[in-house]
Length: 277
Image (cartoon, rainbow, N blue to C red; front, side, top):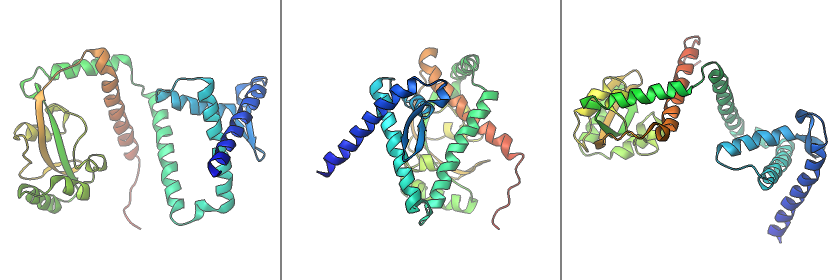
């Protein structure tokens, strides 16, 4: 009975959306179009359009059914938001901190979007980077690419202790999950997602990797600006460079990642950081 009631609520929401969509289309100016109201609070058509852009970026195709589904989510979302405010959930426990972190993440994304307007990634830049990577593979040391795992820590003493444990047969994946500061790879037991060329690595990691034997880890931790690394060579293979049209999305993402690092580096030059109180 409860499931039927919930389903009927969604159906009512969809019917409301269909009715309001007809009304909205008759209004002038997209910013003024009202999709629906929930307890007197307006949901605007431009909110639906923004949500639709996000869906399309994930590969969803625009259709009346998709628009109705998104509109339903907006209506239900507004109803939930109103109930949250009424009950004070956002102030309970560690919810304020969780909300702050979520808000920070959204604002970081918006900040980077603004940075990209002034520093866009162009097709010519992607092609130049692709050509550079092709040229790299003609060098002997870059004719192979490497699958790596790493543990990254800030303290040399801790790094030496971890390296000793690993080389004595310790569980690399377990230590990575427990100790590594690089959380993306740490969640995968230290495994770095992409295959890399030696010259794509921060010095002196490139020289370290080519000297390793498959399945072996560095005898001692390696220092870079990021901290102390314990590297394990998981696999090695000959480089195969795909045609530009196949590779350009991946190369573009690599440039975007680098652009983000550049943006943060520029910002942090202007920032004064004081640890603790």
